[in-house]
Structure formats: C-alpha cells, structure tokens
Length: 73
Image 1: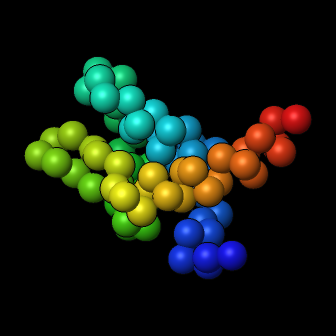
Image 2: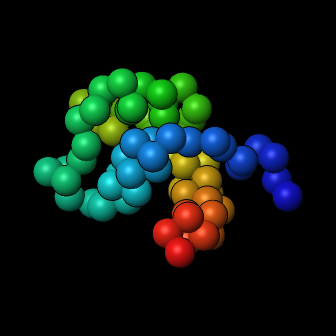
C-alpha cells in the first residue's frame, strides 16, 4: 500500500472532493472550512477563486473509492 495516499477524510471532505471532479463551476462546493482542510492536505488547490482538485487529490479519490463502496454496502 502507498501510505502517501492514505487519507482519513471526513464525509464532508469526501463529498467535496467528489464534487470537484465535475467540470461545471456552478457545481463547486463552497464550504470554506472543508476546502481549506483539503488544500492543507494538498488534495485541492485554488485557481483564482475556484477550487481545483490536484493530481494527488485524484489519486486519493480513486484509491479511496473502493473503501467508500464497502461503507455503502
């Protein structure tokens, strides 16, 4: 396992990270506290005023999606 990509994210953080995959700026979440925590983890960056998922954020999201399926089952 790659411990660099192991992140213990909250439900809000996962939902925000998933929402940032969408290309439409209108669908971008605005929970500042959650976005700031994702920026601190280098999972999201800000491009001007818009949050943008980083390459590391995409890898964490892909890696964590299997764990999210276990929770949903």
